[in-house]
Image 1 (cartoon, rainbow, N blue to C red):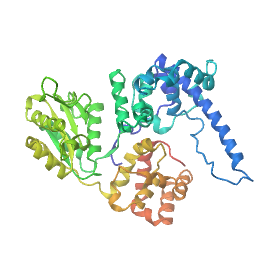
Image 2: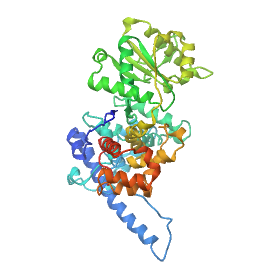
Image 3: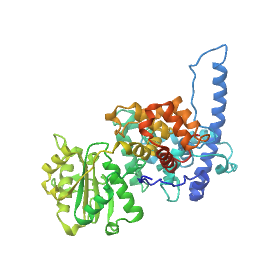
Image 4: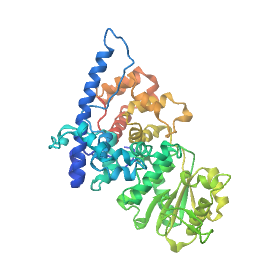
Length: 472
């Protein structure tokens, strides 16, 4: 089977019972309250659904009241967020809702308890009656820390934290953007000693050119490397897979003592102080005995016509560390050819980096690469993805866009198509050979992507390893 490097490969997803078992006493209280809130929400959803059914039935004959509630029997992140707001009003407003403490006064919270919770008698065991959305369970599978209220807040996810941050009076007055509100909230969380990185679910990496070995060799022998190639070639996925292997397995052994960071600018870079306008303070993540990854997310500011002075100093600082063998510093830059030429013009000392050309993902590995990206798609969209949906999306895309892993709305649309639903419904009824024959005979466009039954079997196994059970 083609090797796909992903931290969720064959990792079982935790259940609600598992998370409650990992929780601190405070965390168990929050989870219990979230379960009660979810149960109440589901009751109200059912009532709303019945009312909408009455209003859209004959003789009204209207479809203007369509509604798609969350699945029954599933505890949602919003249930956990409401439990946090109710149980830990000191935590959520202080970290997230700048300037809106009036919404969390004693009277408001008492009303919430009366409306949603009622008496605090012990609820039925949550783990026996409620599930978790698979995309959310994957986030918990990557986090093995004890679960307290702050950890619950972090695992609401970027979308939930962004929603919270937008409740800030600064945002509501139009003084900052949504991104700025989110970053402000994360900084407040970090200052308060709580996790400040919600991050994105990692992307899988298909090692289509022995990139992991090449990068390990460059970092073992010298001060670093530059991963050169076009967008969509897997450069960032390669860097991420290398960092996870180093952190989780200590490989390669010669580098296991080194730290690893990518585009980590918390605490800097800072340029100039009241006493010394020329003073420079790099981020704490850029230090001795560290492998530091720098992508376009980090260095673009230095390449603008006005050139961010702090980023310019940071790049030159990294180049200077690379020239000092005693520093133990390693630098990995992810860039296109044009970006690399511009960076070398800013800091010629970067020429010491080994150039590693990252070729395009070959056509025969495209479906595997998209399967490696599928957990990220489900995490961002909160909609299920399947193997046949991904192939249908690739067929529909222009060839030039098939390596664009930044957009995927059409992949979700493909997953919901009637044709894909038929393929998925046949999985449990047909052998792999018969399923392959059915798909490729009735829909010729699928033939180039599923050359043989053996290839279909391999792709289905990859899908199972990364996503778990699919429709069928």
